[in-house]
Amino acid sequence: MIFVDKLKEKKVLFLDDWKGLTVARKVVQCTFTLYSIYIGYKFYHFYLWATGQSQIYVPRPPSVEAFLPISALVGLKQFIFTGIYDFVHPAGLTILLAALAISLLFRRGFCGWICPIGLLSEILDWVGRKIGLGFKFIGLYVYPLYSIKYLLLGFFIYMIFWKMDIGQTMAFLKSPYNLVVDGKMLLFFLEPGRISLLVLTGLIVLSLIVRNFWCRFACPYGALLGIIAFLSPLYMRRDDKKCAHCKRCSEVCPGGIDVSSRSSVRVAECIGCMECAGVCPEKECLEPVIAGRISLNPYIVGLGVVLLFLGAWLAAFLTGHWDNHVPAYMWRRFYMLFMGR
Ligand code: SF4
Ligand code: SF4
Ligand code: SF4
Image 1 (cartoon, rainbow, N blue to C red):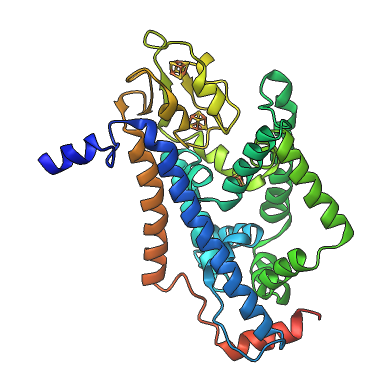
Image 2 (image 1 turned 45 degrees about the vertical axis):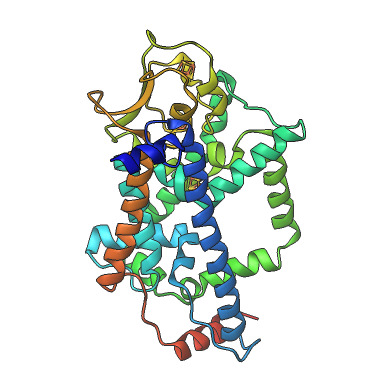
């Protein structure tokens, strides 16, 4: 106990002092982002081998399927209607299921703690404000912009869950396109066309000007997680009696939510990042609560998100639902046949 108290004194342990939340979240986000970069690097070398541009074999990392959300959504439909787990991109489906489970328990914690695009979006927001471009973009006038992500999500849901029958769903998952879709996605970034470049540049510029533009207004994956988060018993509660009305919580919120004007935050834009609790100077004024009754230490939320995500990975890995077990020579054949290079 004396050792723990000493660590607390030296601020090595800051579980009582929520100021360390930002650092803790950044460490988690950076870890997942660095791992994603490593995965991208490995996949690039696999791609070179599979397309015959290199003779050095590098195994295909299953985690690359995290970047195939549409394929994962099709896999989810197959799983719901037939109970068959997608065996072409099982890791993609596992990651989607993990993100949905996290949303159910910890709001959009996947966005707030794990997704590398979320971190990139926050970095662009930070840069934008440093060079005097960025602004928070909050208020009633932003509401029409939220419709972009819901329209995109509605389109995908309509196409996958309404237009495709179950036979077409299963056929899509086994189609040549879906087999090499990760390679096509890589190609999109390696050799972007003029329109793709224009769209990417537009998104970067918008993200420099408008706080977290992509995540708040355009990402259909985030929109889906936000809808599921409505069912979550967890939300932020602000006690007006203890509040100093300093508005720091509203200043830092990556979701652009005016936290200081609400008694509770249950909106789809809350990414469960706990930044607002971390900056609040008043003790027990702003904290996450379960069903309005049980107050939670915000660190528990971050820890829960990470453990649930890693637990899903471990369960999938141990039960054979992570790697698709396609032999290396088959991958090379698929890529040679279907990449159209
Ligand atoms: S909104 Fe989309 S891109 Fe942003 S953090 Fe969430 S899943 Fe990632
Ligand atoms: S309300 Fe708090 S937990 Fe939710 S997104 Fe804003 S800062 Fe993060
Ligand atoms: S940071 Fe805390 S004290 Fe300041 S306005 Fe928000 S809830 Fe109130």
